[in-house]
Structure formats: structure tokens, C-alpha cells
Image 1 (tube, helix red, strand yellow):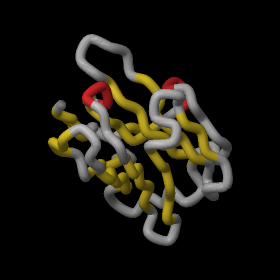
Image 2 (cartoon, rainbow, N blue to C red):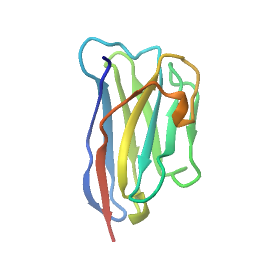
Image 3 (cartoon, one colour):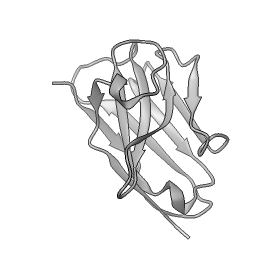
Length: 125
């Protein structure tokens, strides 16, 4: 069973920054997988935040985070990152990492096969 582990969440004031990391547990290599970050706020559906193709040449950002968040990946380290700057209270949510063995860019949650357990991000005003 493939498992993803997110880290880096926490409590931050509005305008602050956080960096989330996602890596697989065990020996699974995600260097050829499409990766994405999703978030789910209380009472809302899980939504895509950003996604990246297997080599990092193509990325997608939702309008709500464009210009503030950056997704990147280090395939040598088997890790995907989400740098979040200029955080706003409306960014408060549980953030999930997702992976799919198809290498192209994927932005729909139904396109992803593997999910992490999520990490809480709370932005105070």
C-alpha cells in the first residue's frame, strides 16, 4: 500500500509563510508520478490548490492561490513541496498531498490514486 506523508503545517499569522512537504513512506518512487496539493476547509468540498507534472515542467494553480503559492518537486529526493506565502485566513484548511502514476498534469481529485492523511494549516487574522 502506497502512503504519502505530509509535513510542515501549523499555525501562522495572516501574511506569513509556510512550506509543506510530501514524500512517500517506504520505497515507492514518485519521480514519474503526477502530484498535486488539495485542501478542504470545514463544511466545504476538497478542492485543488496546485498540481505539477512528473518532471516539473507544467504546473497549475487555482485562482485563489495564484501568485502566492508555489509547487515544486525534487525527484532526486522523492519530495514535493508547497511554498505558501502571503497567507490569508481563508487559506485555513487541511492540506492533502496526492499522487497518480500517470505522469501528465492532473487537476481533478478523482484523477488521483494515492492520498496523504493531510496536514492542518491555520491562518489567524
